[in-house]
Image (cartoon, rainbow, N blue to C red; front, side):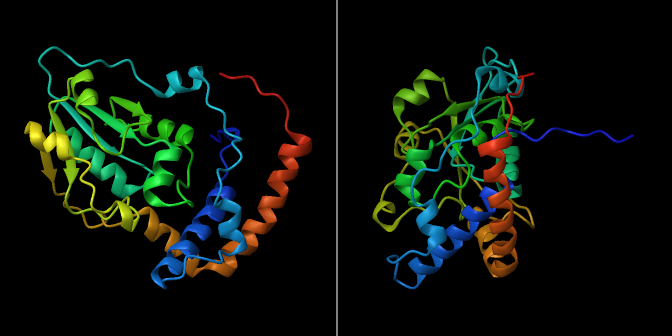
Length: 246
């Protein structure tokens, strides 16, 4: 039996591909010590993107469960940008969930991610990243707009008993000027920081490595991107009709 699913309005794989190309070019320029003179792709995605995906409370509720921490249950917290949710992210969340009963996933908003990681981040907006994380069976709840530097107020407000730090992940590299910051200092001082090492043959995948794969096939992806980008823009400009939320 064939079952068709309507496209999610505002979610564009074409747009994501373009941002991945920009990210790979940006990192290549950084590695060469020349972050100036960005390419057209980098210029296009250096500023906040036009938001075409509009999250509603109904849509978020459809993704979110109704779980609440049980009395006496250990409450785990792990945070990140979770940009283009991939196997490495999911494996980290899975292993964090095994440490306790209730798992909060902190998600940095677009401004926070851009400040610490660079202008071409994030690839995917906070609205989409929230829904992707909520779609994971191992995520009990999310903290939308979580701080990069963990605070005592957040820990006490959510009654967090264990903060997870993955020691063998190169995900979420920050700019050089922020590398001296310890985002887990408060948790370490409170004695609730848990260093986690994930053992998985495919765990080393990162958003940057995905971008590099796209960049390695730049010509092919660029042609597809240019063609689909034009057709998608035409759809939003002239053909889009009002849709009923379900």
